[in-house]
Image 1 (cartoon, protein in one colour):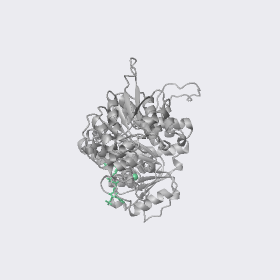
Image 2 (spheres, protein in one colour):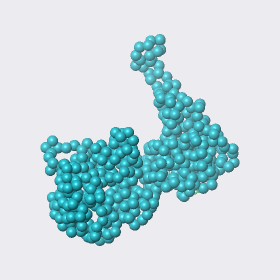
Image 3 (tube, helix red, strand yellow):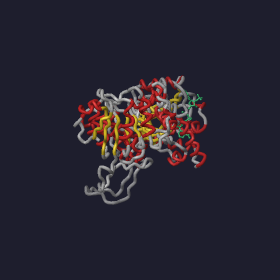
Image 4 (tube, protein in one colour):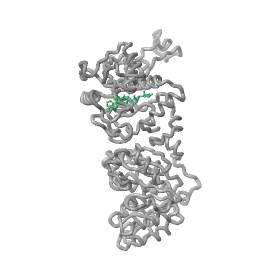
Length: 552
Ligand SMILES: NC(=O)C1=CN([C@@H]2O[C@H](COP(=O)(O)OP(=O)(O)OC[C@H]3O[C@@H](n4cnc5c(N)ncnc54)[C@H](OP(=O)(O)O)[C@@H]3O)[C@@H](O)[C@H]2O)[C@@H](O)CC1
Ligand SMILES: [K+]
């Protein structure tokens, strides 16, 4: 499922209209109809009436059981059904306010109003601006609604009491909005939020930045957002994702092939995207002839006396995700403390007699990396004198993919690593927002203000695969693609969960997945395991990092 910016969406609209010859008004008709269907579905679910649209439609089914008094099974006969999704048995109890803005988002709302009226729902159009100021397709829809006799009010001119409605369609501002809602728009948004009535937003909640997910003041808090054609980036990034409610993406006639050929590079990370775009074998099938050598060997450089658990978690996660072997290179003094903790793990002490790392260990770690399939560096590593030269030696010398996490990232952030020799094997960086801020030289708030945009730019600029952790982790590739993950939950914000992810990604790389596949599939599986662990523990907050490993 593609995730687009407002600019990309405008381009796709234009191409559909100009290259395919589909008129803009047809797209608007499809949009409004889809919105009406979702409103009707919402009304149906809250009235408790089961979906039985055919019954609602009061359609004929001549020749069925009951005619002639028989109670036996239905005889085959002439069956007619109505327009199921646009029918509502409880329509008489509904009255919806349709908040109409000046642009095409308002036009979508006007189309939806016609379909709702057809379903028997009372609607009142509430124009934010005098209807005469609408232009183009929106003006055409204004006239159609007027010709149908739909009652209309103009905000500021006519009396409005939101207590009189049972629901609100927000068709005020869409992808053409800029900055904080002004004047009547702002007042209508505030009144809708205060009404306590469910709000369905057309395309995006009015007041949301469609690209970044930032909330302007005020911003609609929707129960449902009916997003048109493609997901907008602002709907998958927080805080926008929290204001959108349940998001339904509805097709309006813009083919996905246009997004593909038109250079849309961001996708939601779904099983279909994993299987299709990323070509991941999600079944993780294993050869009947396989042995431990088939599934790769991870070398982990991690851990200090104070943070030995980080190394244990990464190593166990790599093993649990299915790699054949893991060797943990660790400061010598740490060895007695962790022996036997994970019996499947191989331990190799390097330097570090005091339990910390030192710069002289680089040569030994590089020697250990020979013949290994992946090197993972950073969990619980700590900082030490000469650590930049140490990491540079590994970066420039390790002839295998490199995964860098935690203090490994802090070392990178202070080093001028753009000047290090380029690598022939991929690098995956796995920062949380604070580490990302240090890497990019911006504040954490700036990272969070447009996670997708920043991740895509950083990964391309530095030629690395980036896993920007946090709610809806973003995976960005050096080739410019991005994947937004939606598995997982806030309970996974717990010590060690990142070490587990490093282990999972490393374990998948060891099994032969490429960097984008391992990063994306690893993040996806990590989230799924977190969800499973929450169910096993009966609450997300009870999940520990070790539970995530056990739920893999
Ligand atoms: N194109 C297509 O074919 C299709 C488009 N579709 C739909 O169209 C939507 C995009 O439509 P759009 O581009 O007309 O912009 P939209 O968001 O409705 O309104 C912009 C207007 O609002 C105003 N305004 C702006 N900012 C403001 C603010 N802060 N506070 C107050 N006012 C503000 C501004 O007016 P101005 O101030 O410039 O006079 C401008 O005219 C899209 O989300 C989808 O729903 C679908 O039907 C599918 C086919
Ligand atoms: K809207």
